[in-house]
Image (cartoon, rainbow, N blue to C red):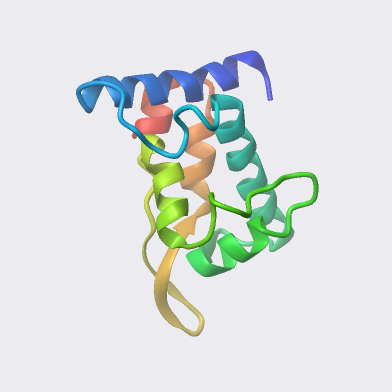
Length: 128
């Protein structure tokens, strides 16, 4: 991840905090930093790659994140879907009802995460 790509995520977080009326207490304040958010997005995209998928149910994404080698997404950060939602809130990435082969479930689309890491539009890419 280039310095510009890391800055685009950091700019998006700062812009969202400004729009929210200042810094809010969330999962990233004090305990985590912007590099962790970038790593989370990279790990999520790697999971989409491994599964050759353009969309995944939230439960599958969380289960996969908990098994990523070299990262500790377990513990207090990803015990349930609400924790993941809180981590992704600064980027405006939220699970939505998505149709899968076995029915409809809350999930995520790969393009949402790709857009958040797009360096060409720092705030728009992550907040759009």
